[in-house]
Image (cartoon, rainbow, N blue to C red; front, side):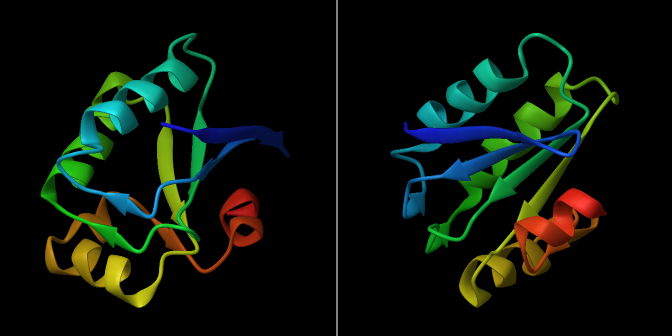
Amino acid sequence: MKLDVQQREGATVVDVQAPRLDAAQAAAFRNALLDVVKDGTVSKLVLDFGKVKMIDSSGLGALVSVLKSLNGKGAILVAGANPSVLGVFKLTRLDRVFPIHESVDAAVTA
């Protein structure tokens, strides 16, 4: 899976290039994010979901897996989620686990 990774103001910003984070993409998504955080220096991971149109339980599971890999030493923030994706986070109450922000800029400065 293609991820564009940048450092901004102490945060690692990941632009997710996939329109769908479903069962077909979840393993590749999880593995790609684990590669980003593997060195243990990421404390704030901002996921730019601006291009993501759909997420299912497999995609959410991948996010939870990556969060667990941070061992409580980091946070994952979601930015730019469309109403459909945001609805899934709210329905599953994962918006309480993954802070949601309207934009990457808002997430980086949070």
